[in-house]
Amino acid sequence: FYQASKKFGLDWKLLASIGYQESKWNDKAVSYTGVRGIMMLTNDTATELGVSNRIDPKQSIYGGAEYLDKLLKRLPLDIDEDEKIWFAVAGYNIGMGHVFDAMDLAAKDGIEVSKWIHLEPYILRLSQSKFYKKTKYGYARGWETAKYIQNIRQYYDILVFLDSQDNNKTTEESGIPKSL
Image (cartoon, rainbow, N blue to C red; front, side, top):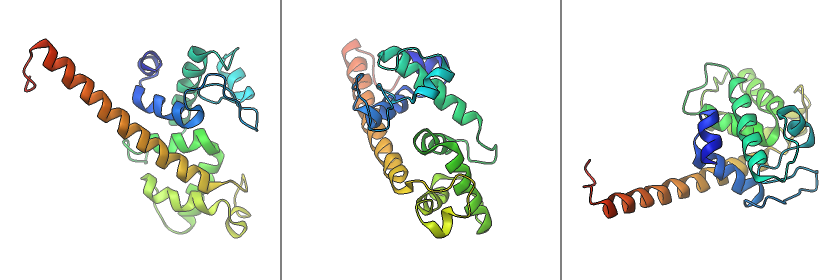
């Protein structure tokens, strides 16, 4: 996760959180839809990214990181920079077409979507026929994506805490005062 994060300019703790949500870090994980590996890549996405073996942990993690990076680059510039990641992570789960559909629904309501908290209610609407019938990509299980983001944020917070504890321990063991 750390090496892939460096290559693609992402936070390793976020990548690890996505991997945990996707597969519980099980490199042999397979879903009922046929996605596989730690980062649960579809066959099409893996092919697009040059991943030849989705259950190879390194290929899966690098593929997931590259895919997330590509999703980030597809987002509009007017989304708050510190919020873009959650839009991209939602796209990782539900597909960017559905994220754009939710943004369009919000725009029709006069809502300027620049934060995840603005988008989430519209992601949830993608499972309701009175809303998804008005979208380009149609029905989506928006409640799953809302829960997906919530879980990843919780895993991320845990990893941030654990990483800070490791950094404190390393600093204490080296004899370097924490204030440096």
